[in-house]
Length: 427
Image (cartoon, rainbow, N blue to C red; front, side, top):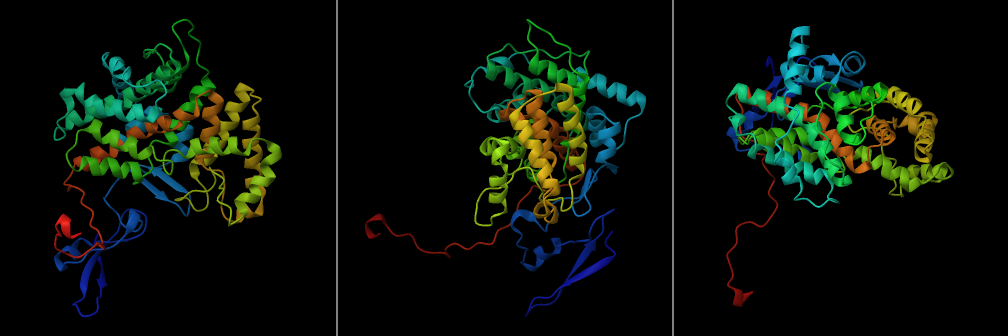
């Protein structure tokens, strides 16, 4: 793995030899850990050029538009797999056999209920609270309800915590929605699959139990798959950093939810709908496209292009197909959705967007799908957190399964040098 060397030459000091590490795929990495002994360290704000860990879970090649989970292309998983099977893959490293899949599904179903006292905890929040604020609080509080699986050094405890989190997140998310609506909380149904059960808890009431549309359930399942993991992003890195201190799994996932809440991370599909509201109607598109092209105008088209994927987002193609299926199933005549489709057409054909690779991304399509299904904008990031929980917990488990150190980034200090304290009467 470290058969090559790099040499760091600093004027006036002896050269420092650094190992060059090679992964399975991807660029080589210079191992700078040896710099500590020389009294120097690197400066890399945002960690854009720093690998914070070694991982076998997810690989991304942004230039080629590749996203692999345990080696499997995301397009294949979205087409042939389902969310719970993808969860098993991320958590365990391999696709399950028929027997393993059946057992895993049964295990998740047995953990879908939450402690009844959580309903009392929920009542402490204002009904107009942002759903993500409630999610951070409730998921963090799970450690107060499930004391029997908090030994992070026990592999069985880690496994039980992982299963509980994957199983209970849809229940908690739906509880948060129902609470905000003033509707009674719907209990999970173990005769439904993962996506069907979530839609049941979101949209059914004790007075009327409607059948779940297979098309909408499949669309929901695909959204979950396409958001399940995305390597060392801000929220995943937050979960790993929190976990490196020995924090319990529920606290670590709550930290990930807090990081995801930021509009630059998990709020992207919510920002798409906000942008569509700002544009207003199809008649205004030309004006806003011109604003987007104007360097001096702060307006940005949300949901186009991607920080990681430089040519195309491999998840977007699947989402585009799913989006078309959902809109056809529902037959919705919504001016905002009509506006979104017109904007998509322009972005795919306008040379300005084509040359800059400003293609519609996964957030653009998922926002449209969620709106069409009837999920309010304020719940979009909650759906993201629900889906990403398995990625977070997979990385947390991976970190704890081998040697690790508590995260402790360094800094380039540019404040005052040492100075003496002046008494108050002399200032």
